[in-house]
Length: 256
Image (cartoon, rainbow, N blue to C red):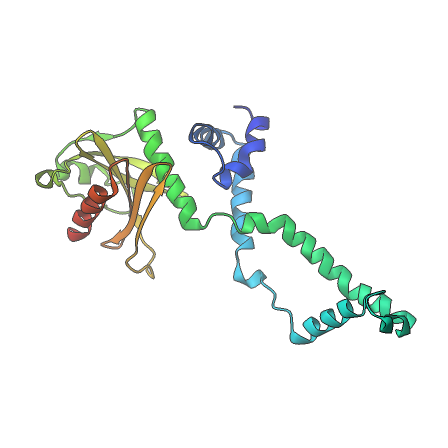
Protein backbone atom coordinates (compact mmCIF):
# COMPACT_ATOMS: atom_id res chain seq x y z
CA UNK A 1 0.00 0.00 0.00
CA UNK A 2 1.39 3.41 -0.95
CA UNK A 3 0.79 6.76 0.75
CA UNK A 4 -1.91 7.90 -1.70
CA UNK A 5 -3.96 4.78 -1.06
CA UNK A 6 -3.42 4.98 2.71
CA UNK A 7 -4.46 8.63 2.99
CA UNK A 8 -7.77 7.89 1.31
CA UNK A 9 -8.45 5.27 4.00
CA UNK A 10 -7.09 7.05 7.08
CA UNK A 11 -10.45 8.47 8.19
CA UNK A 12 -12.21 5.16 7.60
CA UNK A 13 -9.50 3.40 9.64
CA UNK A 14 -9.86 5.95 12.43
CA UNK A 15 -13.63 5.41 12.56
CA UNK A 16 -13.43 1.60 12.36
CA UNK A 17 -15.22 1.41 9.03
CA UNK A 18 -12.78 -0.92 7.21
CA UNK A 19 -12.88 -4.70 7.00
CA UNK A 20 -10.27 -6.49 9.09
CA UNK A 21 -7.80 -7.24 6.26
CA UNK A 22 -7.80 -3.68 4.93
CA UNK A 23 -7.70 -2.25 8.47
CA UNK A 24 -4.54 -4.26 9.25
CA UNK A 25 -2.98 -3.17 5.95
CA UNK A 26 -3.56 0.51 6.75
CA UNK A 27 -2.30 0.05 10.31
CA UNK A 28 0.93 -1.56 9.06
CA UNK A 29 1.44 1.28 6.60
CA UNK A 30 0.94 3.93 9.30
CA UNK A 31 3.43 2.18 11.57
CA UNK A 32 6.12 2.08 8.84
CA UNK A 33 5.53 5.36 6.95
CA UNK A 34 7.27 8.54 8.22
CA UNK A 35 4.87 10.69 6.17
CA UNK A 36 1.54 9.13 7.14
CA UNK A 37 2.32 8.56 10.83
CA UNK A 38 2.30 12.28 11.80
CA UNK A 39 -0.78 12.89 9.64
CA UNK A 40 -2.65 10.11 11.45
CA UNK A 41 -1.43 11.39 14.82
CA UNK A 42 -2.78 14.84 13.93
CA UNK A 43 -6.19 13.30 13.17
CA UNK A 44 -6.20 11.58 16.56
CA UNK A 45 -5.24 14.83 18.29
CA UNK A 46 -7.97 16.77 16.46
CA UNK A 47 -10.64 14.26 17.43
CA UNK A 48 -9.52 14.33 21.06
CA UNK A 49 -9.58 18.14 21.00
CA UNK A 50 -13.10 18.27 19.54
CA UNK A 51 -14.32 16.10 22.41
CA UNK A 52 -13.01 18.62 24.94
CA UNK A 53 -15.87 19.92 27.06
CA UNK A 54 -14.26 23.37 27.08
CA UNK A 55 -15.21 23.76 23.41
CA UNK A 56 -18.90 23.49 24.15
CA UNK A 57 -20.72 26.81 24.17
CA UNK A 58 -24.00 27.26 25.98
CA UNK A 59 -25.91 30.08 24.35
CA UNK A 60 -27.24 32.63 26.89
CA UNK A 61 -30.98 32.95 27.28
CA UNK A 62 -30.91 36.44 25.73
CA UNK A 63 -29.31 35.11 22.53
CA UNK A 64 -31.82 32.27 22.33
CA UNK A 65 -34.69 34.73 22.67
CA UNK A 66 -33.23 37.04 20.01
CA UNK A 67 -32.87 34.08 17.67
CA UNK A 68 -36.47 33.05 18.19
CA UNK A 69 -37.66 36.61 17.55
CA UNK A 70 -35.48 36.90 14.45
CA UNK A 71 -36.95 33.71 13.01
CA UNK A 72 -40.48 34.82 13.84
CA UNK A 73 -40.05 38.17 12.08
CA UNK A 74 -38.32 36.86 8.94
CA UNK A 75 -39.60 38.64 5.78
CA UNK A 76 -42.92 37.25 4.62
CA UNK A 77 -43.52 35.20 7.77
CA UNK A 78 -46.32 37.45 9.12
CA UNK A 79 -48.10 40.59 7.98
CA UNK A 80 -46.41 42.43 10.82
CA UNK A 81 -43.05 41.91 9.15
CA UNK A 82 -43.85 44.59 6.60
CA UNK A 83 -44.09 47.08 9.46
CA UNK A 84 -40.54 46.41 10.67
CA UNK A 85 -38.08 49.27 10.23
CA UNK A 86 -35.60 48.84 7.33
CA UNK A 87 -32.69 48.12 9.68
CA UNK A 88 -34.46 45.20 11.41
CA UNK A 89 -33.80 42.79 8.57
CA UNK A 90 -30.11 43.70 8.48
CA UNK A 91 -29.85 43.23 12.23
CA UNK A 92 -31.51 39.83 11.93
CA UNK A 93 -29.10 38.80 9.22
CA UNK A 94 -26.12 39.92 11.31
CA UNK A 95 -27.37 37.57 14.00
CA UNK A 96 -28.28 34.64 11.79
CA UNK A 97 -25.18 34.58 9.55
CA UNK A 98 -22.76 33.65 12.39
CA UNK A 99 -25.23 31.00 13.54
CA UNK A 100 -25.35 29.60 10.01
CA UNK A 101 -21.56 29.51 9.83
CA UNK A 102 -21.45 27.70 13.18
CA UNK A 103 -24.00 25.18 11.88
CA UNK A 104 -21.86 24.48 8.80
CA UNK A 105 -18.77 23.93 10.96
CA UNK A 106 -20.76 21.60 13.19
CA UNK A 107 -21.85 19.56 10.18
CA UNK A 108 -18.24 19.32 9.04
CA UNK A 109 -16.69 18.27 12.35
CA UNK A 110 -19.49 16.64 14.36
CA UNK A 111 -19.26 13.26 12.57
CA UNK A 112 -15.61 12.99 13.62
CA UNK A 113 -16.23 14.26 17.15
CA UNK A 114 -19.13 11.84 17.56
CA UNK A 115 -17.02 8.90 16.39
CA UNK A 116 -16.10 5.92 18.53
CA UNK A 117 -15.15 6.64 22.14
CA UNK A 118 -11.62 6.15 23.39
CA UNK A 119 -12.65 2.87 25.02
CA UNK A 120 -14.29 1.60 21.83
CA UNK A 121 -11.22 2.54 19.81
CA UNK A 122 -9.01 0.72 22.33
CA UNK A 123 -11.23 -2.37 22.13
CA UNK A 124 -10.72 -2.39 18.35
CA UNK A 125 -6.95 -2.07 18.83
CA UNK A 126 -7.04 -5.01 21.26
CA UNK A 127 -8.82 -7.23 18.73
CA UNK A 128 -6.53 -6.09 15.91
CA UNK A 129 -3.44 -6.91 18.00
CA UNK A 130 -4.93 -10.30 18.89
CA UNK A 131 -5.57 -11.13 15.23
CA UNK A 132 -2.17 -9.83 14.15
CA UNK A 133 -0.43 -12.03 16.74
CA UNK A 134 -2.10 -15.08 15.20
CA UNK A 135 -1.48 -14.07 11.58
CA UNK A 136 2.10 -12.85 11.80
CA UNK A 137 3.54 -15.81 13.74
CA UNK A 138 4.44 -13.44 16.55
CA UNK A 139 2.33 -14.89 19.29
CA UNK A 140 5.13 -15.12 21.84
CA UNK A 141 8.53 -13.58 22.55
CA UNK A 142 8.99 -15.96 25.45
CA UNK A 143 7.38 -19.41 25.29
CA UNK A 144 6.98 -21.04 28.67
CA UNK A 145 4.33 -22.53 30.93
CA UNK A 146 6.32 -21.41 33.98
CA UNK A 147 5.10 -18.12 35.42
CA UNK A 148 8.51 -17.72 37.12
CA UNK A 149 10.09 -17.65 33.66
CA UNK A 150 7.56 -15.43 31.92
CA UNK A 151 7.30 -12.73 34.61
CA UNK A 152 11.08 -12.03 34.90
CA UNK A 153 11.34 -11.92 31.09
CA UNK A 154 9.51 -8.55 31.14
CA UNK A 155 12.06 -7.00 33.54
CA UNK A 156 13.86 -4.11 31.87
CA UNK A 157 11.56 -4.22 28.85
CA UNK A 158 8.64 -2.37 30.45
CA UNK A 159 8.31 0.31 33.12
CA UNK A 160 6.11 -2.01 35.19
CA UNK A 161 5.94 -5.66 36.25
CA UNK A 162 2.75 -7.46 35.16
CA UNK A 163 1.21 -10.06 37.48
CA UNK A 164 1.63 -13.51 35.89
CA UNK A 165 -0.22 -16.62 37.05
CA UNK A 166 -0.48 -20.06 35.49
CA UNK A 167 -4.03 -21.48 35.54
CA UNK A 168 -3.21 -24.97 34.24
CA UNK A 169 -5.10 -26.65 37.06
CA UNK A 170 -8.21 -24.69 36.02
CA UNK A 171 -7.86 -25.62 32.34
CA UNK A 172 -6.29 -22.33 31.18
CA UNK A 173 -2.54 -22.98 30.94
CA UNK A 174 -0.07 -20.14 30.52
CA UNK A 175 1.97 -20.66 27.33
CA UNK A 176 4.08 -17.51 27.10
CA UNK A 177 4.21 -13.75 26.70
CA UNK A 178 5.38 -10.95 24.44
CA UNK A 179 5.66 -7.20 24.14
CA UNK A 180 2.87 -5.39 22.31
CA UNK A 181 1.72 -1.81 21.72
CA UNK A 182 -1.72 -0.40 22.58
CA UNK A 183 -3.11 3.03 23.31
CA UNK A 184 0.17 4.63 22.22
CA UNK A 185 2.27 2.77 24.82
CA UNK A 186 4.13 -0.56 25.24
CA UNK A 187 2.11 -3.21 27.08
CA UNK A 188 2.58 -6.76 28.32
CA UNK A 189 0.73 -9.50 26.45
CA UNK A 190 0.28 -12.77 28.32
CA UNK A 191 -0.79 -15.78 26.26
CA UNK A 192 -3.05 -18.54 27.59
CA UNK A 193 -4.86 -21.45 25.97
CA UNK A 194 -8.17 -23.21 26.37
CA UNK A 195 -8.09 -26.29 24.18
CA UNK A 196 -7.26 -24.94 20.71
CA UNK A 197 -8.36 -21.41 21.58
CA UNK A 198 -5.73 -18.70 22.17
CA UNK A 199 -6.40 -16.08 24.84
CA UNK A 200 -4.44 -12.83 24.80
CA UNK A 201 -4.29 -10.80 28.03
CA UNK A 202 -3.01 -7.23 27.57
CA UNK A 203 -1.84 -5.41 30.70
CA UNK A 204 -0.48 -1.97 31.60
CA UNK A 205 -0.74 0.31 34.67
CA UNK A 206 -4.11 1.95 35.27
CA UNK A 207 -4.40 5.65 36.04
CA UNK A 208 -4.41 6.42 39.74
CA UNK A 209 -8.01 7.57 39.68
CA UNK A 210 -9.22 4.49 37.78
CA UNK A 211 -11.73 2.43 39.71
CA UNK A 212 -12.47 -1.22 39.11
CA UNK A 213 -14.12 -1.53 35.70
CA UNK A 214 -15.72 -4.55 34.12
CA UNK A 215 -16.80 -4.46 30.49
CA UNK A 216 -17.83 -7.25 28.15
CA UNK A 217 -18.40 -6.85 24.42
CA UNK A 218 -17.94 -8.51 21.06
CA UNK A 219 -15.73 -7.06 18.33
CA UNK A 220 -15.51 -8.66 14.86
CA UNK A 221 -16.64 -12.00 16.29
CA UNK A 222 -14.13 -11.97 19.17
CA UNK A 223 -15.18 -11.68 22.80
CA UNK A 224 -13.45 -8.95 24.76
CA UNK A 225 -13.45 -8.33 28.52
CA UNK A 226 -12.02 -5.29 30.25
CA UNK A 227 -11.27 -5.15 33.96
CA UNK A 228 -8.83 -3.61 36.42
CA UNK A 229 -6.63 -6.01 38.38
CA UNK A 230 -4.10 -5.02 41.05
CA UNK A 231 -3.79 -1.51 39.59
CA UNK A 232 -3.49 -2.82 36.03
CA UNK A 233 -5.67 -2.20 33.01
CA UNK A 234 -6.45 -5.69 31.78
CA UNK A 235 -8.03 -6.54 28.42
CA UNK A 236 -8.81 -10.18 27.66
CA UNK A 237 -9.63 -11.25 24.09
CA UNK A 238 -10.29 -14.59 22.39
CA UNK A 239 -12.64 -16.44 20.06
CA UNK A 240 -13.52 -18.52 23.11
CA UNK A 241 -17.23 -18.41 23.96
CA UNK A 242 -18.31 -15.68 26.35
CA UNK A 243 -19.12 -17.97 29.30
CA UNK A 244 -15.67 -19.58 29.32
CA UNK A 245 -13.89 -16.28 28.73
CA UNK A 246 -15.78 -14.79 31.68
CA UNK A 247 -14.69 -17.77 33.79
CA UNK A 248 -11.08 -17.07 32.83
CA UNK A 249 -11.48 -13.36 33.61
CA UNK A 250 -12.84 -14.29 37.04
CA UNK A 251 -9.72 -16.39 37.66
CA UNK A 252 -7.52 -13.43 36.75
CA UNK A 253 -9.45 -11.17 39.08
CA UNK A 254 -9.33 -13.65 41.98
CA UNK A 255 -5.53 -13.81 41.76
CA UNK A 256 -5.06 -10.08 41.26
